[in-house]
Image (cartoon, rainbow, N blue to C red; front, side, top):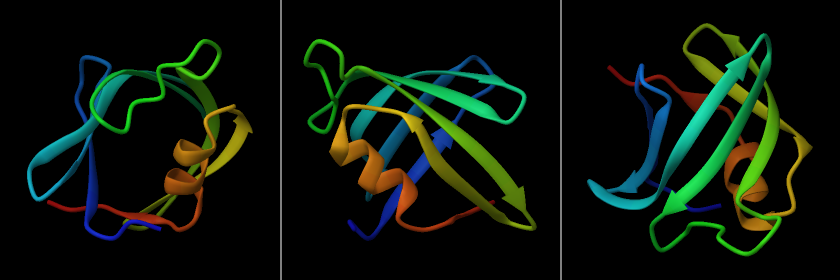
Length: 91
């Protein structure tokens, strides 16, 4: 697990993961019910190989925490980063 990673999701379907305000990966997301699809578009951590750009996850929110579980994703680095722990909401 990489510590110090923050994820930001905007209202226009764009996300960004960063460390100390340095973008590590960014892309587009869609949400349908309790499922989220993430598609990397750039950054040093981006999964850009054919078949790895997009991953699907089930999300669950409880209090100030967001948990993600893999539905389908061939990018193991993204799977490990997103699913190893719950993400805490920051203000």
